Length: 502
Image 1 (cartoon, rainbow, N blue to C red):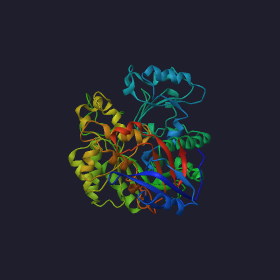
Image 2: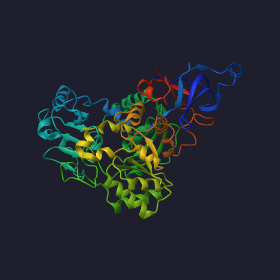
Image 3: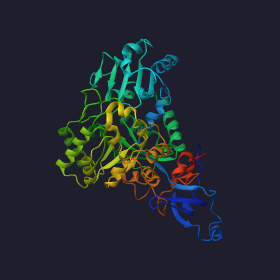
Image 4: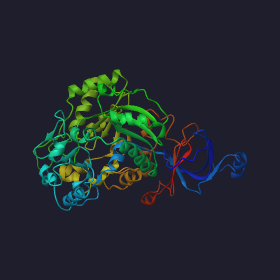
């Protein structure tokens, strides 16, 4: 959507949602030069305000509700835009339907299916999916099926032949790719420049339509350069985390002190383990019915070196750790290096499986817990978590317990799917006691809190004078639980400019 540009704007007849105090305040808001200048209680006579600001462009919000702009604190926006141009397998309810969609889409030189989820299949299993099966789709073109988590993919012989030998955890006989071989398929089979350009447009419009004004974007050195190239055309705020170690990050040829209005470098992402769905998350006890405890991707000694390098370069680490065994290693390094104050605001991503002692240590070390409430889709009885972990599934994604222990929690989607309202519905309505949050908490973890993780809390995340004017207009009171399923995003503003309108 084309931006509506104006230097000043007076919003009247709105209801401001105070997420900290859990209340609604009838308000009028004055925006100048992209910032909130004044927030008036409607107790002040409206006629006086209208007279005072009669020369300002005025927008009547008709009693609708204002919240700070949403932040998705864990996204792969560029990858999402690329995937929207590939073969979407997310709606397939069986393995055979996935294969049929691949057969129907052979016009390109690469047959790339994404986002399949075997927990949605009525027929077929991962065990039946292999290289030979995909060779029947094509033996002359690469054929790829990457799971929704991104940590596992199955490929045919043609694609397998293109996998560099330095990629680890590959099972050639089955065509199975794990971890970096699956995660970095865009490096092995690179999208065209046109695909990347369309990807930014596609993903941005999707994010804005869901009220997202800032993303914590995870990408590689290629993505970093692409964002640099298109930064003047960006419509939402991008905080970049590179999925490379320090040395590789410094070789991108781009300034790591990047601080643009819409694009900033935030830190480095590292992977301690894989995912529950791929059975590669590192666990203390084996996966259900197996001896497999997943994969620990970085040993404690190597992780210690990474932390030291990050400290020397003043770099924040975004640490992917899903299993309890990998989180133990991270916490052990924090103890060893005595990082009790966490000045760089290192963050743990996902931490789906935790024990009470780990929660206490996360609070002690002031680690940020970056979590994804939309993952609760797999946490019901007979769901993917229970199939892989047994009774342990009931203790996963314990948002409420973390909050009660004093841990700072922020929310993102990992693009599974993107959209804060979806995650908020899960977090508020989930039946398990250690998970369930209040609406105010869930909204705060998607709006105000994530800006702390990128050192932006003094300029973003609140509707108050001096802060940058990023906001979302909703049709109903979001603090009332019964309204959550009927909430609609009516409009979105960034720097006081309309970037989306329903």
